[in-house]
Image (cartoon, rainbow, N blue to C red):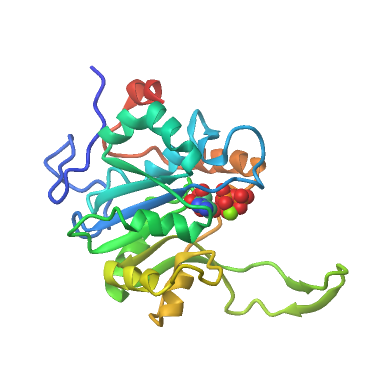
Length: 273
Ligand code: CTP
Ligand code: MG
């Protein structure tokens, strides 16, 4: 018999293998984190007929590969997937029953990333203490990276994964001539998950107003509100799929990982998508 998906049943959720014993050591407090997965971008740099979020990575859509890192965690009480308005009905028709079974809510995103996140924030349920936002386009995040950033956010109220820059950084004029070389000392590239105490993130978004300055990540919104944001060291394996070639890299990274412990969904899982 195929095994069913494991649902979110809130605090105290048990897995089918053993009365709630934790499979991934380091997992944080039970059932307090709402995870938002923004998947409403246009994928312009990715190109092609099929949108980036729905492109297949090793046989399954990118957004699902990303969701899979969160749906079985005991510290996650809610998962929200935000898709573009034009993808909403198609997503519900094609994946709705399975997403519902996995406890994933689908909401309509907006034209700008901050609008997508704002829309998802309206669906956060009562009792959520922390909000984690993770790009649908980052399918290779590891359990260790998620554990580390969740733990830090629970200490400081606001934490993000980031990697130190390793290249030599040039500031270039419009004429494509180097103006100057910038020291990379203390320069980090922000990644996701970005995790915030609920009141800090909701407060920061409430202060944004209707025509905010451009913010390309959620940490920027929180930084502007004055709350310090801590950095948790990550690495380049948590890549953002931006171009089609990144899918090949992502597939290689996932393949190199040890097999996931905990409930496996096997052939049933593959057949459903
Ligand atoms: N995103 C979103 N809503 C938007 C814009 C972006 O939910 N209005 C999401 C994307 O779907 C992606 C994440 O934010 O999961 C990071 O964005 P990016 O990698 O830039 O993806 P796209 O915006 O889709 O790609 P592009 O910028 O090439 O169009
Ligand atoms: Mg974009």
